[in-house]
Image 1 (cartoon, rainbow, N blue to C red):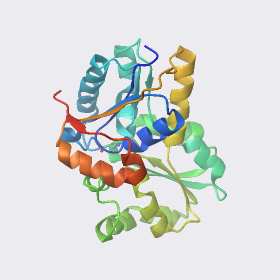
Image 2: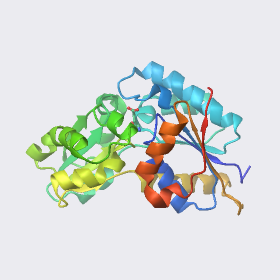
Image 3: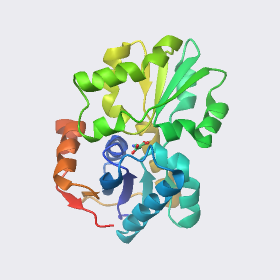
Image 4: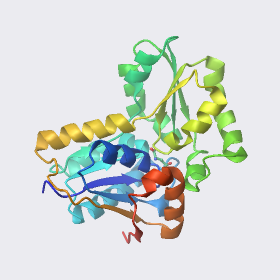
Amino acid sequence: MKNNPIGVVDSGVGGLSIWKEVISQLPNESTIYLADSANCPYGSRQCEEIYVLAQRMVKFLIDKNVKLIVIACNTMTVCCIDRLRRDFPHLPIVGVVPVIKTAALTSKNKHIGILSTVSTANSMYQKELIEKFSNGCTVINKGTDKLVPLVENGIIDGNEVGKVLTEELEDFKTEGVDVIALGCTHFPFLKEKINKILGSHIAILDSGGAVARQVHRVLEKEGLISVNNTVSHEFHTTGNTVQFDLVMGKVLGKEGIKMVKSVQKAAI
Ligand code: DGL
């Protein structure tokens, strides 16, 4: 069991921003990544529908004998992580939420932004997190569904994404936030572009490091840290494998892509 892989799921390539941190902090762990590219984006779907899709993905990974699952998608986390934990009580499940507490502590002017998908921004789950962790800061909780399709197509630089980002980041500028927490795992791949638009005086925080640390803590607690030295990383998509491979190369860059072999079609 200790040497079984860690499963990582997302609607598409976004979860790779979490996967990257997991394999960097836990280099002796094997992973199986599953992207539901055929049904991406999730951000504009109803919660019930996302739950059904998420359940299917978890079952696929359980069949592959994973020892822990990372729900590397904020939208799935806020919508159904509690239900998934109830459905699969013996499987440790780690989710992802924006690092609101760190953002509030980092902010000097006590104005922070959160950038998520629309359904995440509107969710009760996220509103409760803001209530609990914003520590008196003014919070601009912005939702957008315009960015995920761009990242999904490998459009992370250039004029097209620049134009959309400039519009979507306007509220943060107007409110003078000095820290933005990213609430969608696709968005860390836009960090450079966001920095260019807003200036580097605004800190952009993603959740990758925190999720990887949590995975480490849970594995340790469960006695599941790998003692393996033959590590492998598998990639599955419900969509087009060639397209996924291409975009993966783009978002991970040269270093990340060294870890990747071939992408397999997931018939689920
Ligand atoms: N990566 C997913 C998230 O973190 C994207 C959701 C979507 O598919 O719209 O929310």
